Length: 541
Image (tube, one colour):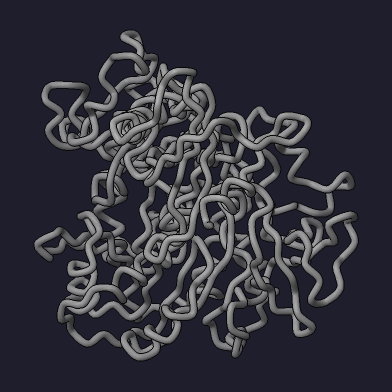
């Protein structure tokens, strides 16, 4: 590989400029006849989207957004699955100079409403099968400040996405790509912790340099690859590396417009000749557990992110996929930065259970638990990023949350503290140990206990609740809840079912507790903090 420091500088010189425009960088700068995405439906029919088609259609949507009152810097949300309409909507948002707010389609109305309110979204674009979640009710106000645009059949609700495209011209002056600069807003995601409401993570345009660097250095996506990142774009790994990274690099990417199933995944891998595949460990475990016959697959590259890989997946992938899956580590706040890299010149024989080394453009270390000094090789400590020595760093703080931001950085500002524990061996290989908070990672999705606990205590019979993650062979972790009921109420299967349904209805369909334990009290510190580690230990016995 060419000098990596030079390549990092080239990427920053491209994306971090005063006149940077996301639509130009992600779409207009590429050949109009080049294929950006192959959108695959559940029946395996497929449609190629070229950059020229995306430029024309997104320009129409940008003009429509302007007519709806969206100005550069405003926020526009999407509640959409993987589709051509999603890509057109995103490029239209960025062409207008607006900021995209992704909403995961498994979210229930309260989680959606919180993100819309917190971001101040002016418009939300929703798939027809999602628009019911935006209906006025307990969580969505009658006089909601956002306008609704519906892609597909919305039952008469909102403005029609296809109609807006048809009624606006691509050469409308309002459709011109707006420059916002490298520090200008691109995306606002939300990430959850153990306490408090979800935190807004602002992603600037210059972050595209980091996303493309990971595609080149970590995943080794090449011009002749058929690349497929199966992650959902409602979350960071899917948004950053199934959509943004490939468009930044001009690499064709597959979007599967269907829900996950092992059988369909095998079919897509085989039918479209996928050579470079990325997914959460849960996907690989599901493929491994699929006992039905499947076509022989031979990948050139396979990568995993979201949680540590287990040894059984590694051995299985070598025999079945023709390549050993490589582990990758990152966060919503930064993207990927410590990885078992695939690119020539970076690829190494990585020790078992290691997540690799920092990518070019990043400098990381493990700090001691009691000071900001670098820990000795093999010493367990806090995984941290050296901000001053990492030119690809783009995260500077959470939206309107100075205290939460300060907790992430060392007092001198040198170190960003990931919140994860780990160690580094004498050869510089990083090993993940655990999170130093209680965030649960299930099937690659980060779930903050507070989000679920705040819903559980809405039940009239619940006094207190705590949620923990417990090991699961398929999903990595699943949620289990510990609930204190009001005096005189006995916990039974009926209340357990009510609580599970409440979480599905008020937070997210995927985040309900798989088991509910009714306890007389929750273990707490003298200061009143719930000791979730004791709950995990008790449930494991």
